[in-house]
Image 1 (tube, protein in one colour):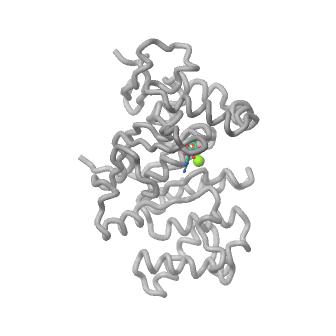
Image 2 (cartoon, helix red, strand yellow):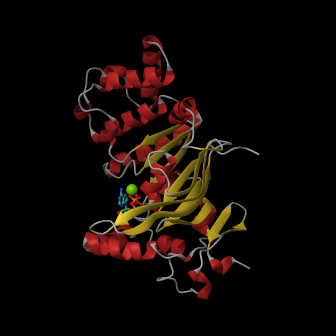
Image 3 (cartoon, rainbow, N blue to C red):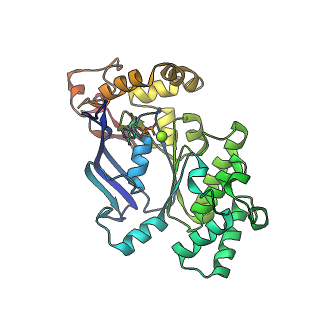
Length: 325
Ligand SMILES: Nc1ncnc2c1ncn2[C@@H]1O[C@H](COP(=O)(O)OP(=O)(O)O)[C@@H](O)[C@H]1O
Ligand SMILES: [Mg+2]
């Protein structure tokens, strides 16, 4: 039995909602998930905005503590690690954020930030650190000369996202968690960054978890997919199988509307005032059973109970009572 790098067991995260936060709703609800352990792979987590992707990412990055359930790192509760194990966790699991500015310190040159990161996390001397940085920068298509003496503000958005990828890869992590890493970049730059993430798997043996609301880019880069709806994973498995034969009624809708998905549903949601949007979402998030019940044409009485994840074919699972015998 291989121990997964990250394993979530029935993990939920509740937030307060409303003026004084009296209503509590699960942004993540009962998620079971395993990542890493065997060969490196490119995984994608897909779902519309507000479905809990970033919350789930922060749980896996040990930034947010689950309200209930257990988030494990190498088989151990990640909130009960020894100090040395926390250090190893930080080396093994690295984040890439939507806004690359979040990675860097505005008042420090990028070069000295990279050097201190390499020295602190890897315990390298200055010469070794510089060498490692040069190698990693080369991988992302930059050079030390180009970076030297410059502060984050002096780079373009695309360059800065490359630098934050270099920063994350510096420690040669086992897993990179990239939360909407291209959504702030010009369309013309996106594909380059996605290619870079994909080749990081080959170059460094790093698994990638690419998080996005955009199914098209997920399909472009991914090998395995998790489809999320209102805090729960509704379908997961080999991405080709999921795309060619979607099982969950929500995944089907997501795929049907693929070309105009963002133009349609996402556009419509953006027109609603934030409060109203949240009321609708929270109403669904509070459901104990299937969260898709209000829209589902196939719903039955059973759907008021929480659906169990069922393997319908090899490497293809769905949480839907329709497939349950
Ligand atoms: N710190 C927080 N406090 C209260 N509500 C939050 C907090 N973070 C996220 N939420 C809410 O949790 C839900 C999921 O948010 P998020 O995980 O950011 O979704 P996504 O990344 O898929 O867009 C949203 O309704 C959001 O408003
Ligand atoms: Mg998000």
